[in-house]
Length: 316
Ligand SMILES: [Zn+2]
Ligand SMILES: [Zn+2]
Image (tube, rainbow, N blue to C red):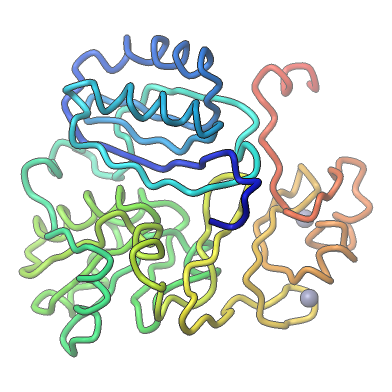
């Protein structure tokens, strides 16, 4: 897509399915990923699987076929981006109670395989959002919507999706409207839209495959800023029709599409900074962080892998 040097894939996927042996599946899945050279972050729970991975095209094809050929994952869909290298430094496969943490005291209260919002393709969403009585609810976190969001969408001041159920009271006024939930890849919307229906919202939709899918299927019209992603790319462009930067550089205030983690490992704050200021500040959020002894070398991306538990144990 970008150029012919892209011999890697970055793939996002999730699938709600019944995995009673989720815990035993984890070491097997990890061994398989290591064997074929897949890196990334994969969560497995009784309710399904959720992952973002990177690997060579060949390794990724092997991985996708492996899942697709397993009857438990037969309906799985993969969102594939081309890339020139791995987007992760390591592979993590973890067992979780939920593949995305709903924040509900009783997570079983909702089951997206039983009842959830109506799925809209990117094209259907693009058409529906033009209607007057439609409200777009972005269920992502504040640092994500700060970097990019749909024009006229409702955003929530939440740090994590766990806080979503507590924010639903703020959405009461939209109960009788057509409500469409949006998120990065669609996984949160499965639960968010199911929960809205449980709370008495009447006409609930969700953007299937999320903003990533919308970007692939359409020109990304009316998405302002860029899409925050949880891998080495940090953020990716969405809109090729009417793009507008909405975050402002922490230092000079110019609108920017860029998001960085502070280079000082002890700060690690998320902030927006233009390319020029980022280089000048060596990836630090402040003058204090710039001269901090634990400042990491800045490679221009503002992405740093978290130290592993083993590395932390060596440090302390
Ligand atoms: Zn700047
Ligand atoms: Zn800092």
